[in-house]
Figure 1: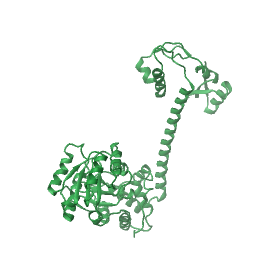
Figure 2: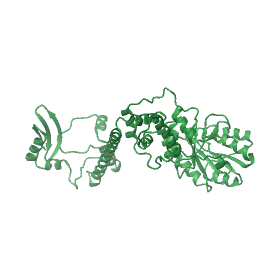
Figure 3: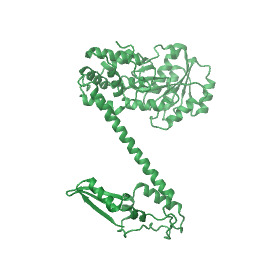
Figure 4: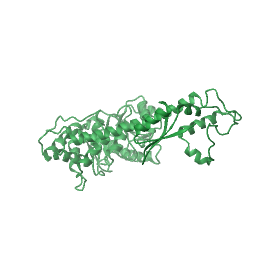
Length: 443
């Protein structure tokens, strides 16, 4: 085996030298730029083939001995250093040989299956890199398209900055700004955006949707979003309207210490019995016994949106044999990235709507409205405090949009540059494809 060195003024000249000396199937081992030009280290095809053992070859080394590799004698290397220097695919391949070879049996040579395994891993790695490069390129092109679309339009830049400062996502801001009619001033553009957002933000509008129609409702969402308190607020409204005998409360919160006790205290105050269930069978039996109730409210376990138990909870509510309308609680104090994950995780086989909570704690509220519009979730209520039942009111799209755009503090960072405004356009992509904005109803 002979590794040859080639130096030329340009890469093309060096490659021509390699091809003339070693043939068109030679292998380039390395390249670097030098003062003399470009240096290439190459190996002939025949020398590469000599490094691989034949298909039927086997070594007779005892179990545990190192694999014999043709070539010069390597220098001693510490075991830890050798392990860390080995490629991930090679370590996996060698560990597989060791696990499959019983004590006293010869270590088998590289087979076609093992080479195919390594090739598959390398292919998957290359495809992942290509996918990452494609995403980066799409982001850069989206930002470039945004910057070149309306250069220097102060009204569009002002509207976009205001939407981003209010907590709305970059894609929603882009959709609105792209549909903005020409010739508007800042005030007119803001009023147009408010009308467009209000038109796309749906709400039940009438409390009879839940209190008069009745049914079984489950409140779902992450830990600490206010499910138990909101359940108590809804229960109080139902008791005032129909009496305690027409209402039933269920809880699946047997995981959190004292979780069901909190709802039991609310139930005792309202004169309503609270039932605890732990699985699908318990839930089905409880709902069968309570089928005469006008409204059944279910307080569920709070868990993070990345918890795998979210899917199990959705399956339990879907497989109990009774139609359960799930209402997801959106924390107004969270940003839209977090709420987007929450909506995706708890969507399951469909959500009936959403309730926005912690409105009194939020500095900007656009993120919750953004997610509700993107996922086409009708808003039932908004919660703005801990008092039961006072701090719960019907969702009013016009008032919520007005508060989101006009209610943030004066110190809010609305003066972003055009380059800063373009970044979220590129970074977020077209996430509004499923339920895009509709400008109907805007002035």
